[in-house]
Amino acid sequence: MSSGISEAERIARLRLARSDTVGPVTFRDLLQHMPSAVEALEALPALASRGGRKNALRIPSSAEAEREIKATEALGARLIVVGEKSFPSRLATLDPPPPVISVMGEAHLLERKSIAMVGSRNASAAGAKIAATIARDLNERGFVVVSGLARGIDAAAHRASLSGGTIGVVGGGLDVVYPEENRALQKEIGTRGALVSEMPPGTRPQARHFPRRNRIISGLSLAVVVVEAAMRSGSLITARFALEQGRDVLAVPGSPLDPRASGSNSLIKQGAALVENADDIIAALDSPVARQLFEPEPFTFAAATTRTPEPDAATRKRIISALGPTPIMVDEIVRQTGLSVPTVRIVLLELDLAGRLHRDTGDRVSLLPEDYA
Image 1 (tube, rainbow, N blue to C red):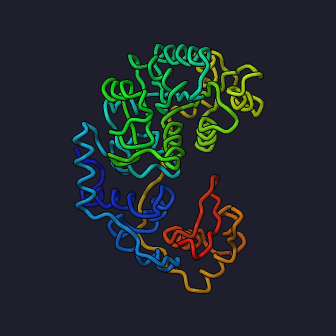
Image 2: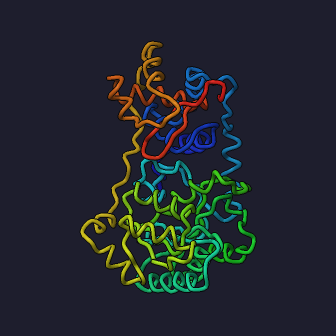
Image 3: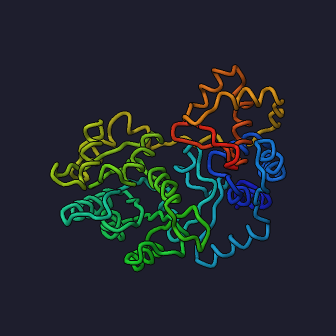
């Protein structure tokens, strides 16, 4: 069966995704600017140089990409790049989708209707029990449970949904266990459920990896349920991603005396649906707005048929002058400069590859000092 793209393009997309300074947004913009990932790789050094990069951009070789694929397969997993037919359809609805993921275990679970459950690592006994009960009941009603394999609420939800379908999204490589106390659980999910990672095998999880993990957790799901979350927690980051992705955010209320419930209670005050059990969650999903989420439309990830003309020095200067240390919407840069969206995005792409652009949520960008590159 055809994967949807050639093997050369598959290798090129993996190399592109693993290149310096290329994140999901940059990857998307490169493929919308270039006819193929093969040509995007060839253009990377020149684009980064025009953006002001001083040192050479590291681009993995084809041999390195092939070694990563073989290392993934040696784990009993499969590496999938965006554009392949086997790429999960719900992740393909994201803008931008993750460029590459690896999946171990029952990959078909990624196509079933799923609910994410996230919450405190330092969960109360009551919170863990509620999470387990809801997860088990969601399984019985045909839903797969998605979480991040952290201790506390995540682990409780995974354990309760092992027999009915669970997906664990990890912040490191599929062969790296974090936290160590979940070693047996992660192994069992890799056999009976599905494990998903954006990182190459052997990657130790770092703080910067977890927002990308959280984005996949919400992206795979129709809704995110928050059970016990402090005001500054990864669970609230997952909830924010869910809202950006058009997913529902639901929260289980907790005691106002317990700081572990301050974030989830705050979500309810801000409009998240208050839920206490699986029936409440299904009722929330049955609303007219939520029903639209059951048939997600894939993001149009078509490569360009022609390249955007290279901006001249004056055009590049106008765009850079519109940037500063304060994040600004890309649409506002287009409005202020009067330039076309493709022209603005290609200059932002150059700055990003040079390490001079910071991308914030909501398609906002800011300029880093030139000596940062």
